[in-house]
Image (tube, rainbow, N blue to C red; front, side, top):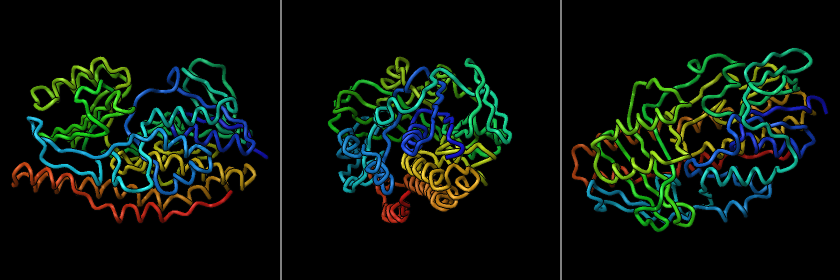
Length: 394
């Protein structure tokens, strides 16, 4: 096996998933992660369609189902908290309830993947890549703190704001496409005493979801707002991001004032734009991108986690099939997934248009009709497309 020494940047979902498969196939894997450990928090994420097959092949599907959120439905409420609409058929975070999908918290899946590869790969926490130089012998990597090292291949699985992508492909601005909104999320006490339930309120350009989590012991809060023009902010300065949200929601009704108080104490706060990464190619020489780093569809697709799991499976499988020949493997990886990624990203654009139409229609309706317009979803085409991808056996 040639090119067996691989560096993966990112220890969330895509990176550890790839590390699992590469290690299983005999590659020597190192994972570098900027954070001092596994990152806490994150939204409820969905594993669906072929990604369930990947989880089963990894031997983690049963444990994954045990970690499921178990959310039973959603309510849309007015500013006083009065229920305007409810559904036990679908939720805003998980889609259709009556299906094989598994909705879990992001950090729960992250820990599960970490356990699956424990002892089989090397981790470099509290570390980041500062430079990449390629030649025929490999990729020479400079780190912020550690001594330089040379790897056969480098994989950027480091998210929307990928450092590997910036170093190997150029500025983020060339690939990031803003979809007109922002979202902040964090953990708080289950102060509404929600029972496997989520509650949603929309007030003009501001929206919020509060959902119970971890067997109702806590809740996750989502705060989202429309913003067509991209904002200028430091995506690593969480205090500045909290101030931005506090200013945006100042004077808002419903539970927003209480939510903001919990936000200030949240240690797992995350804030970012709803954006997509669109690239003509996902590899350059010995460097390749995986998951959000190469083809983020935004949370509007509900497919980010599934694409990460599927992408990791396919990339590792093609490297195995090509006996480490990165040129053949990277080309086959992209051939397998390009159309599926393109179709998935289109769903985000369709969801954005659907929501804008619903909100525009809501302006001329009473609150109950508006809530129903926002809540109702037809996901038949979505599931048909997701399930149309057939995984190869490697």
